[in-house]
Amino acid sequence: MVEDEWRPLGVESDDDIAEYDALHDGVPSWMEAAFWAWVKAEITRHRRYRDGSGWVAHLDEDLAESMCQTLRVPLPNLRVNGTDAMAGRNQLDSALYALTKNASGLQVADYILAHGKDPKGDVLEALFRRSKSAWTVGSRFGKPGLVRRVPLGVQAGADSVIGRAGRAGVRLAKAWENLYGIRPNASEAYRLAILAVEDASVPVVSPANTRATLGTVLKHMEDQGDWALPMSREDSRSPSGDVIIGMMRTLWHGQHDRHGGQPTGPGNVDQAEAIVAVGLATTLVQWFDAGSIARTANRVGDQSTVRRVP
Image (cartoon, rainbow, N blue to C red; front, side):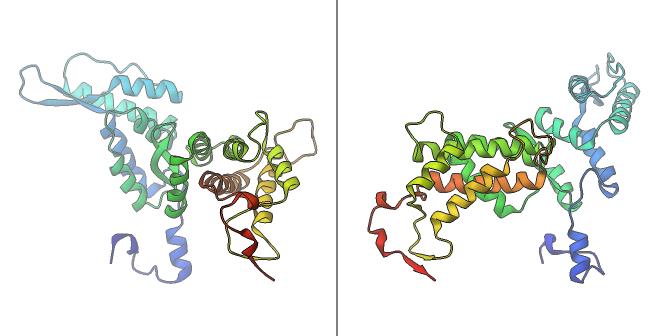
């Protein structure tokens, strides 16, 4: 039996397993000691004694100061000269005290992953997995960082689209960062999801219109009425063209925070809405990029043989 399948004695019923396997935000108490030990190791450097007889642990002052300034954590002046072991211990203890009392542990780890000197992300990731953390070590803004854990199949599919879809893929990557990153921004994730679909669809549907939006693309596709997926068998109640239009309508009209002056409106989109938007965008970008969404008259082969099942 692999380690991931092992659970403590007594965790046997479906309810027990679901409760035990639930993911936890922040730094839960059972993870706290090991987590801050990882932080301490990452902000520790070693200086050689003057006589060359050994090494003394001390604080990486540059890393600690830049991190605390960025995270707005009050930090006393901890710079010392020389290689005194006691001074080194005091440095590290003072820095850890300031971080544990004034900073989000997740923000500290995220900063170290992005700016530390060869941080051991694999050690942190193993700790997150054992502790059932809702976070995983991934990539944010082109640097290592923390992202919310999503099912591996979903992540793999999104990574595949992001990696090959050009400008639309870049927008998708930024949308995922805003959706699952350490500082999630649902409205920005939704906005970027729409931009990604525009990047993928405008050159296919409205190539002559340099100012086309997703709404423009929708209008063109609805007027033309012959866009479809390459399915040889379809349900007459939901032909693939209607599915495409429905997905795009849902994405376009669901962004209810793009217009101001609506005091009775629902306000900003929330995380649940942004998850749907980014999921829809990922699929649509994949289909447009692969050429799967096309007008039936332009497809190679006779599309009149498509079977519609009542």
